[in-house]
Image 1 (cartoon, protein in one colour):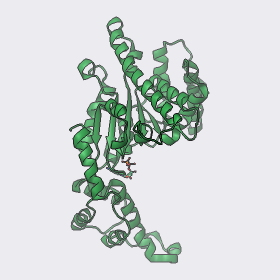
Image 2 (tube, protein in one colour):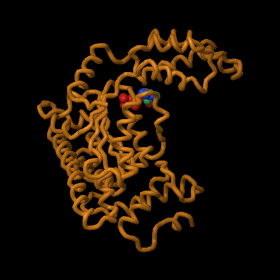
Image 3 (cartoon, protein in one colour):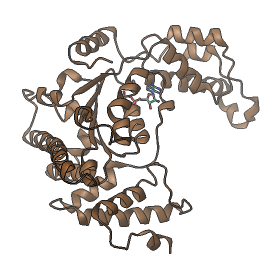
Image 4 (tube, protein in one colour):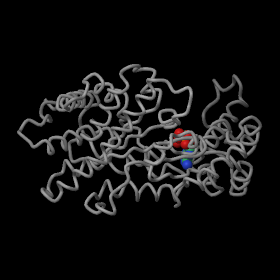
Length: 375
Ligand code: ADP
């Protein structure tokens, strides 16, 4: 049977074994594989669970239940995002390629002075594509993607949070290259002088910082070992774990945590050209009557809109032709429904407004010039 056939049975070194486990797990994560791809979805799931159990058994000093939760809820499978799905943000994409994607794909080139960063922060107004970028980085660097937020660590697993953080980092190292994506990092790494900070969130924060530092010491260890044994892949893999975080509130991040994000990339509101590309993309599979001057007008009247505001606007405008029909919608042939027009966008604009204010923007720009990485 296929499932049994794929379980590594012969004796392998730990590194070879992890490599093959990683490859199997990656089936739904997307990296290109040489494995057969004819397994049914059920087979894949069973296979994955068996491999996950093997990994969990191989981890030392990690709570098994916590590790199971990491696999069940934190490791993201499927639903890939590629660079091309993201409109604009060229400088952010370039920065991420240089800081993460290239080093992960060519670790041999990124050593010593070129050693990759272990923390990168994406900050800016909500809905500007920070989460999309993180997912694209994981896809393009063929990494295992772990996605956590304060709520996934705190409320649900009260009391178990530190174990979960330890398990998270242990599994990320085992399955490296890995991206640990922390959405709304400000709510995990909030300022210490925040009075609302309770004992449990303080403990999570400390554990996270400890585990995060352990990545750097693993890297330091790997450099030492590199001289002793340049073929040791495990050490090299240890260095390929990155904490990538996103926030809409960069000014609320604890200073100690902020300093660990060596790169801080501003993700601004989309510029004219970016909004143009996004509208084109959103309408590309729809029947519409918009001509070039209409797109120009759309771009002009959506100044200050975020990427997600634009998506909401286009979704709402796309409903226009259906709304016109009322109940007749139920018996109208698909071909008879009128195309989407500029008029639909204009009427949607009456109640879909930009979610970021001018004052809000100024605050981001000030923080970017004070703490952001250039480029
Ligand atoms: P953030 O994490 O910055 O709050 P997201 O990445 O979650 O924003 O984006 C929210 C939604 O907005 C996405 O699912 C997508 O539909 C849309 N969006 C935002 N920015 C872009 C972009 N640059 N290109 C295409 N879609 C975008």
